[in-house]
Length: 101
Image 1 (cartoon, helix red, strand yellow):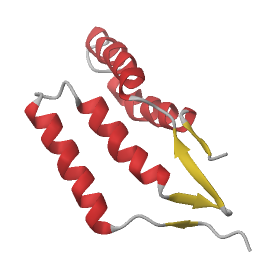
Image 2 (cartoon, rainbow, N blue to C red):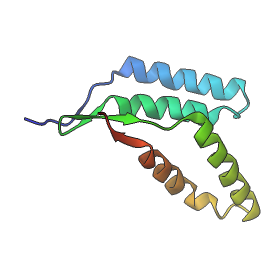
Image 3 (cartoon, rainbow, N blue to C red):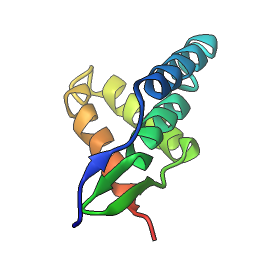
Image 4 (tube, helix red, strand yellow):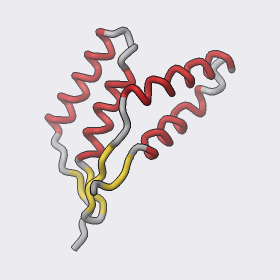
């Protein structure tokens, strides 16, 4: 039977989120894309859909470039682009999520 499940643990999640928050705080937000990729990658890599494990292939370098572009668009549009930012980020995450081979 092809089950779907998540096999990550609570202590792992807490540890990854604390580490991500610490990294973001210590770098004054510059490394937030790296923290985001780290936590999201952990979440995706522990997800199995219909018996097939997912993997996250995005990198912090890829996200950082997009992050700068999105920040500039938000500034240029006086914050209006910020309404689309969450959707844009979700599209980026999905684009870099695939089934393990």
